[in-house]
Length: 112
Image (cartoon, rainbow, N blue to C red):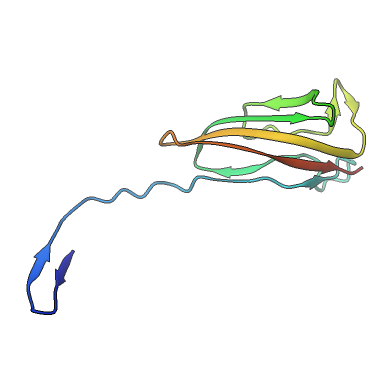
């Protein structure tokens, strides 16, 4: 980069800039596991993630789902049985490829 001030004095610097991949997580707030092939799996979408831990809890705090696999979503079942239509709480812990950590939480509505 070369810059000049109002008196014409110039200075320059050379420096390498590393552009890291995006580090984002999008979490939907409703899903409909009714077998119609649309929106049947609760699966957050992420980019630039190295470590991933998704946990879903029912309204009493009981863990109904957990995964460490970005491609493994929740099908709305617990122990093979369909869960009730209600609001669930999710927590996600993720790290970027460079080691930056994020902890997120929110709610999710299951509608059949």
